[in-house]
Image (cartoon, rainbow, N blue to C red; front, side, top):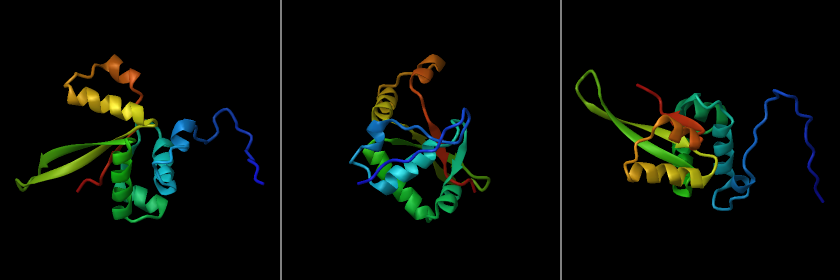
Length: 138
């Protein structure tokens, strides 16, 4: 038999609350849930770098990208590709990720993009985006 032992939480203690629906989602692996929890634990305006995530979570960058791809398929992450031109005139793709606590939030976000609805500020506030994840800039 197992019990749950919790710490006493202070007013501004460092802990994360995640919707139980996400925690109990059997479509994502424990490793995917772990990375999702890590991403959701950061401040909303925190800028992630894949290399930093890999280092802090003791993963390779390839593993981080693989987990992010699986979270995209599961509906917790949305990838936005940007093409930029380097100083040398070459084009480079950069991925930016939007991370959602609930897959329904991600689907609503995708629908807004698909149907070309402009996101005005108060509409974005109704869709609580959790975090943006950016790869390393070169």
